[in-house]
Image (cartoon, rainbow, N blue to C red):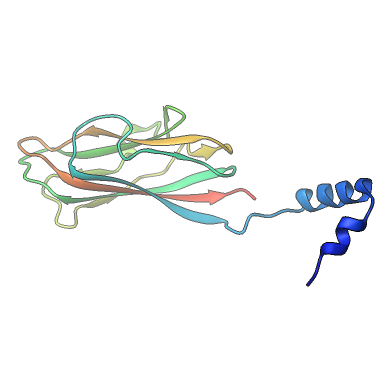
Length: 149
């Protein structure tokens, strides 16, 4: 359809239409997954796999961590997720923890207690601990994000 006729409307009317459309806008997505990847050998460190900026208000509802390989002899890989520098796991035992001898190499988080996102929030992933006696590698962390709009 040709919408060029709208350009012939008075500016005040075009502005009013723009405001009406903006007020009724609903994003095309309600849920998405966000992936952080740390290739090769991982270490206990902050801001692993980059930074993600939330495009809209919402909530992180789930965190899945997957580690491809390890040569560890004890402990596990513990992952934390931060929104603007603050952990989303106020109960630290709810962080995804992949045991050194995990056959699947994956772990799902417990309840995400502080996962509220504002538009523009910066999200990062930390590796809080790694297996003892070895060097785990190829970490992927997948966040499930549900948007408010």
